[in-house]
Image (tube, rainbow, N blue to C red):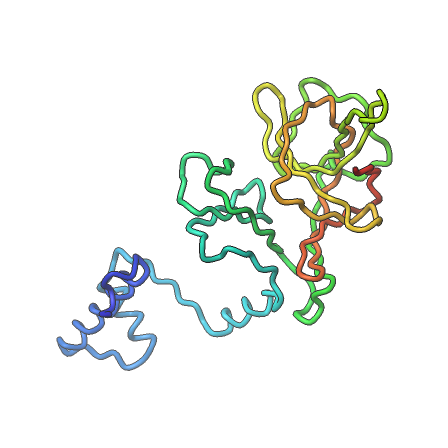
Length: 251
């Protein structure tokens, strides 16, 4: 297929650049190296911004990409990938493009956790940390907050220790459970949509995201605001590591 015909906007730009270079060469212009090629394009194609990317920059980018990246099934069904600034470590996979509401799941195929930044070399993939700076209000604490103010607001991406109650089938007792959750959004009525995390083993410090485990909670259910966890890549799973043991009680 001829350059610049039928293969999308990126190829259309490439076709425009190629035709420009061919025209200049046919008119007697001299294009004998990469620098002269770039100069000709900048002088003749004013509506296309040209940014040079050198070999050493490409190699430096390759060096920070882990060689073992968690895969996402149903890749061929993905039509749109959404990244929200509230959740910089999550890519939402959508089977049909939707620009009305990014946080809905009507076309969602699930989400893919990504590692934002690593400080380790490529061969140290069993323990790849991401450095996170704590805000003043999310410093580790050893006590639960008990009561939360009715006016309390939680920003998307805030990690909470949340209490849930379940009635026992064998008795009239109410069973209490505590889970780590991440805030998705908070509505005007102060109800909070959260995504649940599950404890990995019995460490009480390492957790993984449970897919499609979303629910709406009230402020009264919030026991504690947790610090932002570090992200680790362990055996192709993204693990959320908290700096202290979280007092969870899972079902």
